[in-house]
Image (tube, rainbow, N blue to C red; front, side):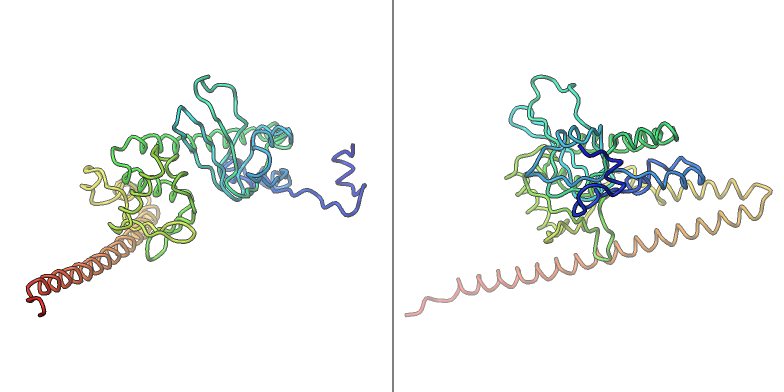
Length: 329
């Protein structure tokens, strides 16, 4: 068998293209955010092997085993981590930037059907010997690894709470906004979520049956909360806010900024206070722009609703007039 060293040296058949590799800095930037600039310059030379996962081929846990990898970072595409309990299937969605790991035998015996499968073609950067060698040389990479895992666990916890909402339409809307936190795109017309998920997949994400999810999506569309697009959804209406949050005049980050500004203002460093004031003004302007766009979208939806109501009223009057007319002889 030809060794990896000889392959890189150029021996063997010339028609064989070298395997794709990606820099550790690009695989998951958060893994190296605790490193110093000098360490980052050295880590830039560490590259991880890349494989293409396809749902029609080997399962991802088997793929990791074949490449002697204990985990991977998703570069492109989507991966579904699913588990079946009885007749219900729960799904955790992993996308670009997320981490996945080989399953362990900790699942209860009565929970069956564990699958780690790519939803379409997905590119994965493998965590194997190259990654382990990098952690030995720069141990703070492990700190970034645990921080990244913690972020995914927090998102999974939010998903668990969403699944306990009483109404399915609330679950679906909250789940779409949760996914948009990771993969959404802010546009003047709303938040675009470019994920073409099936109704069955959405059901696995929120703990509901596919027909119920279809009815929930239809209701959300009729209410003007979402607009279905070819490559996903356009989110127009956020989930209902907590009453305590509605009472806030400023969002938490701006409230903290104002509080910090008042403290700096009492300090003896005028330049620091001036810089803090500029930062606060910038944040207030950004918040004003967001509120302005939201108000504009709300006025647009009200205008559409008025047009629809006018059309319905005219149709009702037309039907009532036709019923009052005497039948023709």
